Image: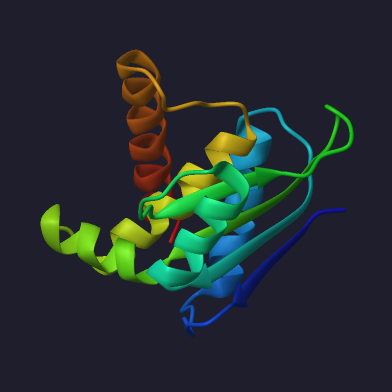
Amino acid sequence: MQTIHFRNADKTFLFPNKTVIKKFIGLLFKEEKKVLTELTYVFCSDEFLLEINRNYLQHDFYTDIITFDLSETQHEIIGEIYISLDRIKENAEELETSLKEETLRVLFHGALHLCGYKDKTKSQIAIMRKKEEQYLQLYEKSV
């Protein structure tokens, strides 16, 4: 049985279509042939996520997302994904896309990290972007 939570840290994000999005994220894991047990998304500010970045990853810069794989075995996925609402808003403006699309992209990006996708090299980034786009299109067709 899988459980997906949306939580707010120091910023509040009211999620439209929360049930539909949770169901779709479950589908993403099935499509990737992964067993999701529990996933918690935590929405926060730049400053909140910067502290996590400093304390856990020893990085001193803003980021839009940090994904923690808390799985104890490789057979089931348990994860926490922290998302800066400040970053996704700024990214949406810079990329000239809607806040909804950028939010979905980041939600799927974190889930894809838990499925094993990386984004450190150019080729990994290209694969990640292709997967994000694939799931964005699939989501739009499903709603």
